Each structure stands twice: as structure tokens, then as C-alpha cells.
Amino acid sequence: MNKRPLSVTIVGWLFIAAGTIGILYHAREIDLAHPFAVELVLALIVRALAIVGGIFLLRGARWARWLVIAWLVYHVILSVFHPVGELVMHVLLLAVIGYFLWRKESSRYFRTSPSPKV
Image (tube, rainbow, N blue to C red):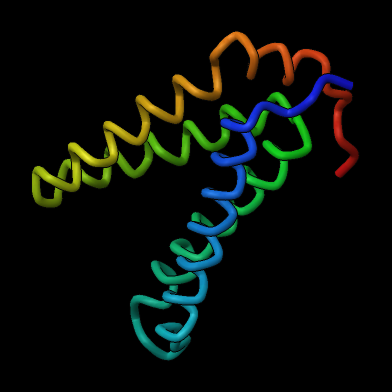
């Protein structure tokens, strides 16, 4: 098997950390009696997707690259309704992470990695 590029390792762990921190942050807000409980559960699902994407990036799953990019695109879309600085930060993250996940070394890693078992 091809050695995992450092950039993929960093991005994978970044997503695992972001998802974990997001879940810990939002978990304390859940109150099923509250009318916005569904929104909080959806926020937790989005955070869990970050963790799944990070784990499977580390395992070499080709589809995980698309999952983390979709996750970032979702945040770029959400950022349109927030301050401009937040939008700029998410767009920059999308560009940088997209670059690192589709570089030649990264693409080779994802092509040669066996499909991980779920």
C-alpha cells in the first residue's frame, strides 16, 4: 500500500477534531422539549459527518475526499448569511483543503489504497 501523505493525515485529523469539538459544543444544548431540537440534532449529524470523513480519509477511502469537500461547501453556503470574514475563511479552507486532497501524491494514495471495510 502507498504511504499516506502528511497533508492527508493532517486534514483527516483536522476533521476528526473539528467534528468532535462541534459535537461536544452542541451536545450540551440539546433539549428535546425545545422547539429547535431538530436543528440541534441536524447540527450534531453534520459534526458526525466531519468525524466520519476524517476517519475514512486516514483509511484511504476515495469517497471521503468528496464528503469533506461537500462538508466545507455546506459551510461556505451557510457563511453567506454570516459576516464576510467567516465566508472568506470557509472559502480559503475549501480551497486549501481541496488543493491538498487532490494533489498528485494524495490522488495516488487514494487510487492505491484498498477500499476500507465499513
